[in-house]
Amino acid sequence: MANEKFDVIVVGAGPAGASCALTAAQAGLKVLLIERGEYPGSKNVMGGVLYRKQMEEVVPEFWKEAPLERPVVEQRFWVLGEDSLFNVGYKGMEWAKEPYNNFTVLRAKFDQWFANKAVEAGALLITETVVLECIVEDNRVVGVRTDRPDGDVYADVVVLCDGVNSLLGKKLGFHKELRPDEVALAVMEVMDLPAAKIEERFNLEPNQGCTIEIFGDATKGILGTAFLYTNKDSLNIGVGTTLSGLIKAKLRPYDLLEYVKNHQMIKPLLKEAKPSEYAAHLIPEGGYHSIPKIVGNGVILCGDAAQLVNAIHREGSNMAMTSGRLAAETVVLAKQANDFSENMLDTYRTKLMESFVGQDLKKYKDVTHTFESYPQYFKEYMPFINKAASDFFTVDGTPKRDKQKKIFSSMMERRGKWQTFQDIYRAWKVMK
Image (cartoon, rainbow, N blue to C red):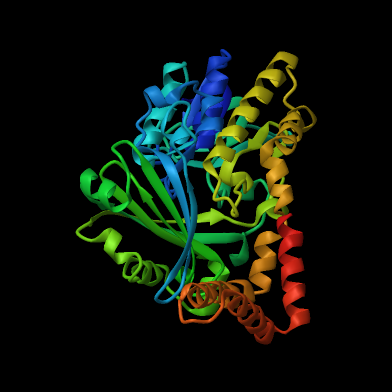
Protein backbone atom coordinates (compact mmCIF):
# COMPACT_ATOMS: atom_id res chain seq x y z
CA MET A 1 0.00 0.00 0.00
CA ALA A 2 3.00 2.26 0.32
CA ASN A 3 2.69 5.54 -1.56
CA GLU A 4 -0.82 4.66 -2.67
CA LYS A 5 -3.25 7.57 -2.41
CA PHE A 6 -7.04 7.32 -1.99
CA ASP A 7 -9.77 9.93 -1.97
CA VAL A 8 -11.07 8.57 1.31
CA ILE A 9 -9.97 5.93 3.80
CA VAL A 10 -12.70 4.48 6.01
CA VAL A 11 -11.55 2.77 9.21
CA GLY A 12 -14.01 0.11 10.41
CA ALA A 13 -16.45 -1.92 8.28
CA GLY A 14 -19.49 -1.78 10.56
CA PRO A 15 -22.74 -0.05 9.54
CA ALA A 16 -21.20 3.45 9.57
CA GLY A 17 -18.08 2.42 7.67
CA ALA A 18 -19.87 0.32 5.05
CA SER A 19 -22.45 3.07 4.52
CA CYS A 20 -19.72 5.66 4.05
CA ALA A 21 -17.59 3.47 1.75
CA LEU A 22 -20.57 2.48 -0.39
CA THR A 23 -21.87 6.04 -0.78
CA ALA A 24 -18.40 7.39 -1.61
CA ALA A 25 -17.67 4.58 -4.09
CA GLN A 26 -21.02 5.10 -5.83
CA ALA A 27 -20.03 8.76 -6.28
CA GLY A 28 -16.88 7.64 -8.11
CA LEU A 29 -14.35 8.26 -5.33
CA LYS A 30 -11.35 6.01 -4.79
CA VAL A 31 -12.16 4.33 -1.47
CA LEU A 32 -10.20 2.13 0.92
CA LEU A 33 -12.20 0.34 3.65
CA ILE A 34 -10.08 -1.14 6.45
CA GLU A 35 -11.42 -3.77 8.88
CA ARG A 36 -9.40 -5.18 11.78
CA GLY A 37 -11.47 -8.37 12.03
CA GLU A 38 -11.19 -11.52 9.96
CA TYR A 39 -14.23 -10.28 8.07
CA PRO A 40 -16.75 -7.41 8.50
CA GLY A 41 -19.03 -8.26 11.41
CA SER A 42 -16.59 -10.60 13.15
CA LYS A 43 -15.88 -7.95 15.81
CA ASN A 44 -19.26 -6.23 15.86
CA VAL A 45 -22.12 -6.75 18.30
CA MET A 46 -25.60 -5.33 18.62
CA GLY A 47 -28.87 -6.67 19.95
CA GLY A 48 -29.92 -7.51 16.44
CA VAL A 49 -32.58 -5.09 15.19
CA LEU A 50 -32.07 -3.26 11.90
CA TYR A 51 -34.38 -0.35 11.03
CA ARG A 52 -35.47 -0.19 7.41
CA LYS A 53 -35.65 3.54 6.66
CA GLN A 54 -32.00 4.55 7.07
CA MET A 55 -30.71 1.37 5.40
CA GLU A 56 -33.01 1.92 2.44
CA GLU A 57 -31.51 5.37 1.92
CA VAL A 58 -28.19 3.65 1.23
CA VAL A 59 -29.36 0.45 -0.51
CA PRO A 60 -32.90 0.76 -1.94
CA GLU A 61 -35.06 -2.36 -1.42
CA PHE A 62 -32.19 -4.07 0.39
CA TRP A 63 -34.59 -6.61 1.91
CA LYS A 64 -34.79 -8.40 -1.45
CA GLU A 65 -31.16 -9.53 -1.20
CA ALA A 66 -29.74 -8.83 2.28
CA PRO A 67 -29.22 -11.72 4.76
CA LEU A 68 -32.02 -10.73 7.14
CA GLU A 69 -33.58 -12.94 9.78
CA ARG A 70 -37.25 -11.97 10.28
CA PRO A 71 -39.27 -8.81 9.64
CA VAL A 72 -40.52 -7.67 13.04
CA VAL A 73 -44.32 -7.59 13.29
CA GLU A 74 -44.59 -7.26 17.06
CA GLN A 75 -42.76 -5.17 19.61
CA ARG A 76 -43.39 -6.01 23.27
CA PHE A 77 -42.28 -4.08 26.32
CA TRP A 78 -42.12 -5.91 29.64
CA VAL A 79 -41.76 -4.46 33.11
CA LEU A 80 -40.41 -7.46 34.95
CA GLY A 81 -40.96 -8.21 38.63
CA GLU A 82 -39.40 -11.07 40.57
CA ASP A 83 -42.41 -13.27 39.82
CA SER A 84 -44.51 -11.18 37.46
CA LEU A 85 -44.47 -9.06 34.35
CA PHE A 86 -46.46 -6.11 33.08
CA ASN A 87 -46.79 -6.35 29.32
CA VAL A 88 -47.59 -3.71 26.68
CA GLY A 89 -46.80 -3.70 23.00
CA TYR A 90 -47.98 -3.47 19.43
CA LYS A 91 -48.46 -6.05 16.68
CA GLY A 92 -49.26 -4.92 13.16
CA MET A 93 -49.53 -6.97 9.96
CA GLU A 94 -48.57 -3.89 7.92
CA TRP A 95 -45.04 -4.57 9.22
CA ALA A 96 -45.15 -8.07 7.68
CA LYS A 97 -45.10 -6.77 4.10
CA GLU A 98 -43.00 -4.40 2.02
CA PRO A 99 -41.50 -1.99 2.79
CA TYR A 100 -41.53 -3.42 6.36
CA ASN A 101 -40.55 -1.52 9.51
CA ASN A 102 -37.52 -3.31 10.89
CA PHE A 103 -35.80 -6.68 10.87
CA THR A 104 -33.83 -8.93 13.15
CA VAL A 105 -30.33 -9.59 11.82
CA LEU A 106 -27.16 -11.43 12.75
CA ARG A 107 -24.27 -9.01 12.38
CA ALA A 108 -21.72 -11.56 11.25
CA LYS A 109 -23.84 -12.24 8.16
CA PHE A 110 -25.27 -8.79 7.58
CA ASP A 111 -22.05 -6.79 7.89
CA GLN A 112 -20.26 -9.02 5.38
CA TRP A 113 -23.06 -8.49 2.87
CA PHE A 114 -23.18 -4.72 3.49
CA ALA A 115 -19.41 -4.26 3.15
CA ASN A 116 -19.46 -6.36 -0.02
CA LYS A 117 -21.97 -3.87 -1.51
CA ALA A 118 -19.26 -1.23 -1.10
CA VAL A 119 -16.76 -3.54 -2.80
CA GLU A 120 -19.18 -4.13 -5.69
CA ALA A 121 -19.42 -0.34 -6.04
CA GLY A 122 -15.64 -0.11 -6.37
CA ALA A 123 -14.25 0.22 -2.83
CA LEU A 124 -11.17 -1.75 -1.84
CA LEU A 125 -11.71 -3.78 1.35
CA ILE A 126 -8.78 -5.08 3.37
CA THR A 127 -9.36 -7.16 6.51
CA GLU A 128 -7.23 -8.34 9.44
CA THR A 129 -5.51 -4.97 9.36
CA VAL A 130 -5.18 -2.74 12.42
CA VAL A 131 -4.89 1.02 11.95
CA LEU A 132 -2.33 2.12 14.54
CA GLU A 133 -2.68 5.86 14.15
CA CYS A 134 -3.62 8.66 11.81
CA ILE A 135 -0.78 10.28 9.91
CA VAL A 136 -0.81 14.01 10.63
CA GLU A 137 1.15 16.54 8.59
CA ASP A 138 0.90 20.31 9.00
CA ASN A 139 -2.03 19.95 11.44
CA ARG A 140 -4.01 17.85 8.95
CA VAL A 141 -4.79 14.14 8.79
CA VAL A 142 -3.38 12.87 5.51
CA GLY A 143 -3.57 9.09 5.94
CA VAL A 144 -3.25 6.16 8.33
CA ARG A 145 -0.46 3.94 9.60
CA THR A 146 -1.39 0.25 9.68
CA ASP A 147 0.28 -2.82 11.20
CA ARG A 148 1.14 -4.14 7.75
CA PRO A 149 4.69 -3.94 6.38
CA ASP A 150 5.00 -0.65 4.48
CA GLY A 151 1.51 -0.04 5.80
CA ASP A 152 1.28 3.76 5.49
CA VAL A 153 -1.53 4.75 3.18
CA TYR A 154 -2.70 8.23 2.26
CA ALA A 155 -5.99 9.94 1.46
CA ASP A 156 -7.60 13.36 1.21
CA VAL A 157 -9.95 12.45 4.06
CA VAL A 158 -9.93 9.72 6.73
CA VAL A 159 -13.31 8.69 8.16
CA LEU A 160 -13.07 7.01 11.57
CA CYS A 161 -15.74 4.39 12.26
CA ASP A 162 -13.61 2.48 14.74
CA GLY A 163 -16.16 1.98 17.49
CA VAL A 164 -17.23 3.33 20.84
CA ASN A 165 -13.77 3.69 22.35
CA SER A 166 -12.23 5.20 19.23
CA LEU A 167 -8.52 4.95 19.93
CA LEU A 168 -7.74 6.89 16.78
CA GLY A 169 -10.05 9.74 17.79
CA LYS A 170 -8.49 9.73 21.25
CA LYS A 171 -4.97 9.94 19.80
CA LEU A 172 -6.08 12.96 17.81
CA GLY A 173 -7.33 14.56 21.03
CA PHE A 174 -10.96 14.53 19.90
CA HIS A 175 -12.16 12.89 23.12
CA LYS A 176 -10.90 11.70 26.49
CA GLU A 177 -11.28 8.35 28.20
CA LEU A 178 -14.99 7.54 28.46
CA ARG A 179 -16.48 7.62 31.96
CA PRO A 180 -18.29 4.51 33.29
CA ASP A 181 -21.61 6.40 33.18
CA GLU A 182 -21.12 7.16 29.48
CA VAL A 183 -21.07 3.54 28.33
CA ALA A 184 -23.21 0.46 28.78
CA LEU A 185 -21.79 -3.02 28.87
CA ALA A 186 -24.05 -5.40 26.95
CA VAL A 187 -23.71 -9.17 26.97
CA MET A 188 -25.65 -11.38 24.61
CA GLU A 189 -26.12 -14.99 23.65
CA VAL A 190 -27.42 -16.40 20.40
CA MET A 191 -29.38 -19.56 21.23
CA ASP A 192 -30.36 -22.01 18.52
CA LEU A 193 -34.00 -23.11 18.43
CA PRO A 194 -36.00 -24.63 15.56
CA ALA A 195 -38.14 -22.15 13.62
CA ALA A 196 -41.37 -24.03 14.37
CA LYS A 197 -40.81 -23.76 18.13
CA ILE A 198 -40.05 -20.04 17.85
CA GLU A 199 -43.26 -19.44 15.93
CA GLU A 200 -45.31 -21.49 18.39
CA ARG A 201 -43.92 -19.82 21.52
CA PHE A 202 -44.06 -16.26 20.23
CA ASN A 203 -47.38 -16.62 18.34
CA LEU A 204 -45.79 -15.93 14.95
CA GLU A 205 -46.29 -17.11 11.39
CA PRO A 206 -43.24 -18.16 9.33
CA ASN A 207 -41.12 -15.13 8.33
CA GLN A 208 -42.54 -13.01 11.15
CA GLY A 209 -40.46 -11.73 14.05
CA CYS A 210 -40.98 -10.41 17.55
CA THR A 211 -38.87 -8.26 19.83
CA ILE A 212 -39.20 -7.93 23.60
CA GLU A 213 -37.55 -5.09 25.52
CA ILE A 214 -37.40 -5.97 29.22
CA PHE A 215 -37.14 -3.46 32.05
CA GLY A 216 -37.33 -3.70 35.83
CA ASP A 217 -36.04 -6.80 37.60
CA ALA A 218 -34.01 -7.82 34.54
CA THR A 219 -31.34 -5.30 35.53
CA LYS A 220 -31.71 -5.56 39.31
CA GLY A 221 -32.56 -1.87 39.60
CA ILE A 222 -29.62 -0.69 37.47
CA LEU A 223 -30.28 1.67 34.57
CA GLY A 224 -30.55 -0.55 31.51
CA THR A 225 -32.65 -3.17 29.73
CA ALA A 226 -32.65 -6.78 28.71
CA PHE A 227 -33.88 -7.97 25.33
CA LEU A 228 -35.13 -11.07 23.55
CA TYR A 229 -35.31 -11.12 19.75
CA THR A 230 -36.43 -13.85 17.35
CA ASN A 231 -34.24 -14.88 14.40
CA LYS A 232 -35.05 -17.51 11.77
CA ASP A 233 -33.92 -20.45 13.88
CA SER A 234 -32.32 -18.82 16.89
CA LEU A 235 -32.98 -16.29 19.64
CA ASN A 236 -30.90 -13.32 20.79
CA ILE A 237 -31.08 -12.95 24.57
CA GLY A 238 -29.07 -10.20 26.24
CA VAL A 239 -28.86 -7.51 28.87
CA GLY A 240 -27.10 -4.15 28.94
CA THR A 241 -26.57 -1.75 31.83
CA THR A 242 -24.38 1.24 32.46
CA LEU A 243 -20.87 0.29 33.44
CA SER A 244 -21.11 2.64 36.43
CA GLY A 245 -24.24 0.80 37.60
CA LEU A 246 -22.50 -2.57 37.43
CA ILE A 247 -19.56 -1.22 39.40
CA LYS A 248 -21.79 0.27 42.13
CA ALA A 249 -23.88 -2.89 42.42
CA LYS A 250 -20.77 -5.11 42.23
CA LEU A 251 -22.48 -7.24 39.62
CA ARG A 252 -20.81 -9.22 36.87
CA PRO A 253 -22.56 -8.89 33.49
CA TYR A 254 -22.60 -12.61 32.71
CA ASP A 255 -24.17 -13.29 36.13
CA LEU A 256 -26.90 -10.79 35.24
CA LEU A 257 -27.44 -12.52 31.91
CA GLU A 258 -27.79 -15.89 33.65
CA TYR A 259 -30.31 -14.33 36.02
CA VAL A 260 -32.34 -13.06 33.04
CA LYS A 261 -32.18 -16.42 31.24
CA ASN A 262 -33.39 -18.26 34.31
CA HIS A 263 -36.13 -15.82 35.26
CA GLN A 264 -39.41 -17.71 35.51
CA MET A 265 -41.07 -15.37 32.99
CA ILE A 266 -38.30 -15.86 30.41
CA LYS A 267 -37.00 -19.39 30.93
CA PRO A 268 -39.99 -21.11 29.24
CA LEU A 269 -39.30 -19.14 26.04
CA LEU A 270 -35.72 -20.45 26.00
CA LYS A 271 -36.54 -24.08 26.78
CA GLU A 272 -34.42 -26.51 24.70
CA ALA A 273 -32.56 -23.59 23.06
CA LYS A 274 -28.82 -24.25 22.77
CA PRO A 275 -26.23 -21.47 23.16
CA SER A 276 -24.19 -21.04 19.98
CA GLU A 277 -22.52 -17.64 20.38
CA TYR A 278 -21.62 -15.33 23.26
CA ALA A 279 -20.62 -11.70 22.91
CA ALA A 280 -19.91 -8.68 25.09
CA HIS A 281 -19.64 -5.14 23.88
CA LEU A 282 -19.49 -1.55 25.10
CA ILE A 283 -22.24 0.75 23.85
CA PRO A 284 -22.05 4.55 23.95
CA GLU A 285 -24.85 5.75 26.24
CA GLY A 286 -23.72 9.29 27.04
CA GLY A 287 -25.89 10.73 24.27
CA TYR A 288 -25.85 14.35 23.18
CA HIS A 289 -23.57 15.62 25.96
CA SER A 290 -20.94 12.99 25.14
CA ILE A 291 -20.62 13.72 21.42
CA PRO A 292 -16.92 14.56 20.95
CA LYS A 293 -15.28 16.74 18.35
CA ILE A 294 -16.32 14.94 15.16
CA VAL A 295 -14.60 16.96 12.42
CA GLY A 296 -11.03 18.07 11.94
CA ASN A 297 -8.70 18.93 9.10
CA GLY A 298 -8.88 15.86 6.85
CA VAL A 299 -10.82 13.71 9.30
CA ILE A 300 -14.43 12.83 10.26
CA LEU A 301 -15.86 10.62 13.03
CA CYS A 302 -19.02 8.53 12.51
CA GLY A 303 -21.23 6.00 14.28
CA ASP A 304 -20.23 4.75 17.73
CA ALA A 305 -16.91 6.62 17.43
CA ALA A 306 -19.00 9.82 17.45
CA GLN A 307 -21.17 8.42 20.33
CA LEU A 308 -24.26 8.36 18.11
CA VAL A 309 -26.61 6.07 20.03
CA ASN A 310 -30.15 6.81 21.19
CA ALA A 311 -30.28 4.70 24.36
CA ILE A 312 -33.98 5.37 24.97
CA HIS A 313 -35.14 3.85 21.69
CA ARG A 314 -32.25 1.39 21.39
CA GLU A 315 -31.20 2.95 18.07
CA GLY A 316 -27.58 2.90 16.99
CA SER A 317 -27.00 1.11 13.70
CA ASN A 318 -29.47 3.34 11.87
CA MET A 319 -27.75 6.45 13.24
CA ALA A 320 -24.42 4.97 12.22
CA MET A 321 -25.60 4.38 8.64
CA THR A 322 -26.93 7.92 8.34
CA SER A 323 -23.74 9.42 9.73
CA GLY A 324 -21.65 7.34 7.30
CA ARG A 325 -23.76 8.44 4.36
CA LEU A 326 -23.59 12.12 5.37
CA ALA A 327 -19.82 11.85 5.84
CA ALA A 328 -19.40 10.42 2.34
CA GLU A 329 -21.61 13.10 0.80
CA THR A 330 -19.50 15.75 2.55
CA VAL A 331 -16.28 14.21 1.23
CA VAL A 332 -17.74 14.36 -2.30
CA LEU A 333 -18.41 18.08 -1.83
CA ALA A 334 -14.92 18.58 -0.41
CA LYS A 335 -13.42 16.77 -3.40
CA GLN A 336 -15.31 19.00 -5.82
CA ALA A 337 -14.02 22.08 -3.98
CA ASN A 338 -10.55 20.53 -3.42
CA ASP A 339 -10.86 21.72 0.15
CA PHE A 340 -10.44 19.19 2.98
CA SER A 341 -10.16 21.66 5.81
CA GLU A 342 -12.11 21.40 9.05
CA ASN A 343 -14.20 24.36 7.94
CA MET A 344 -15.27 22.55 4.76
CA LEU A 345 -15.83 19.17 6.42
CA ASP A 346 -17.93 20.85 9.10
CA THR A 347 -20.77 20.51 6.58
CA TYR A 348 -21.01 16.95 7.90
CA ARG A 349 -21.49 18.09 11.49
CA THR A 350 -24.15 20.61 10.44
CA LYS A 351 -26.11 18.05 8.38
CA LEU A 352 -25.82 15.46 11.13
CA MET A 353 -27.18 17.80 13.80
CA GLU A 354 -30.03 18.86 11.50
CA SER A 355 -30.97 15.23 10.78
CA PHE A 356 -33.03 12.93 13.01
CA VAL A 357 -29.73 11.83 14.57
CA GLY A 358 -28.89 15.19 16.09
CA GLN A 359 -32.52 16.09 16.79
CA ASP A 360 -33.28 12.86 18.66
CA LEU A 361 -30.05 12.95 20.66
CA LYS A 362 -30.79 16.56 21.63
CA LYS A 363 -34.37 15.70 22.64
CA TYR A 364 -33.15 13.04 25.10
CA LYS A 365 -29.94 14.82 26.08
CA ASP A 366 -30.52 14.54 29.85
CA VAL A 367 -32.42 11.26 30.09
CA THR A 368 -29.64 8.77 30.83
CA HIS A 369 -27.88 10.84 33.46
CA THR A 370 -31.18 11.84 35.10
CA PHE A 371 -32.40 8.27 35.50
CA GLU A 372 -29.01 7.18 36.79
CA SER A 373 -28.87 10.08 39.25
CA TYR A 374 -32.35 9.27 40.57
CA PRO A 375 -32.41 5.46 40.90
CA GLN A 376 -35.95 5.42 42.33
CA TYR A 377 -37.30 5.15 38.79
CA PHE A 378 -35.80 1.68 38.37
CA LYS A 379 -35.63 0.62 42.02
CA GLU A 380 -39.09 1.75 43.19
CA TYR A 381 -41.46 2.76 40.40
CA MET A 382 -40.97 -0.24 38.13
CA PRO A 383 -41.58 -2.79 40.90
CA PHE A 384 -44.59 -0.68 41.91
CA ILE A 385 -46.10 -1.02 38.42
CA ASN A 386 -46.21 -4.81 38.81
CA LYS A 387 -47.62 -4.61 42.35
CA ALA A 388 -50.30 -2.14 41.23
CA ALA A 389 -51.26 -4.31 38.25
CA SER A 390 -51.52 -7.37 40.51
CA ASP A 391 -53.73 -5.51 42.98
CA PHE A 392 -55.96 -4.01 40.29
CA PHE A 393 -56.52 -7.20 38.31
CA THR A 394 -56.99 -9.51 41.31
CA VAL A 395 -60.75 -10.08 41.77
CA ASP A 396 -61.37 -10.07 45.51
CA GLY A 397 -64.71 -8.31 45.82
CA THR A 398 -63.18 -4.85 46.23
CA PRO A 399 -64.74 -2.23 43.90
CA LYS A 400 -62.37 -1.05 41.18
CA ARG A 401 -62.71 2.59 42.26
CA ASP A 402 -61.53 1.63 45.75
CA LYS A 403 -58.63 -0.27 44.23
CA GLN A 404 -57.61 2.81 42.23
CA LYS A 405 -57.67 4.94 45.38
CA LYS A 406 -55.63 2.37 47.28
CA ILE A 407 -53.01 2.16 44.53
CA PHE A 408 -52.71 5.95 44.35
CA SER A 409 -52.48 6.24 48.14
CA SER A 410 -49.86 3.52 48.27
CA MET A 411 -47.72 5.36 45.73
CA MET A 412 -48.00 8.60 47.73
CA GLU A 413 -47.05 6.81 50.95
CA ARG A 414 -43.95 5.30 49.37
CA ARG A 415 -42.40 8.50 48.13
CA GLY A 416 -44.55 11.22 49.64
CA LYS A 417 -46.90 13.38 47.61
CA TRP A 418 -44.46 16.19 46.93
CA GLN A 419 -41.60 13.83 46.05
CA THR A 420 -43.85 11.80 43.75
CA PHE A 421 -44.93 14.89 41.83
CA GLN A 422 -41.30 15.95 41.60
CA ASP A 423 -40.34 12.53 40.19
CA ILE A 424 -43.16 12.63 37.63
CA TYR A 425 -42.30 16.18 36.57
CA ARG A 426 -38.59 15.36 36.28
CA ALA A 427 -39.28 12.31 34.10
CA TRP A 428 -41.70 14.26 31.90
CA LYS A 429 -39.22 17.09 31.51
CA VAL A 430 -36.38 14.92 30.19
CA MET A 431 -38.63 12.78 27.98
CA LYS A 432 -40.91 15.44 26.45
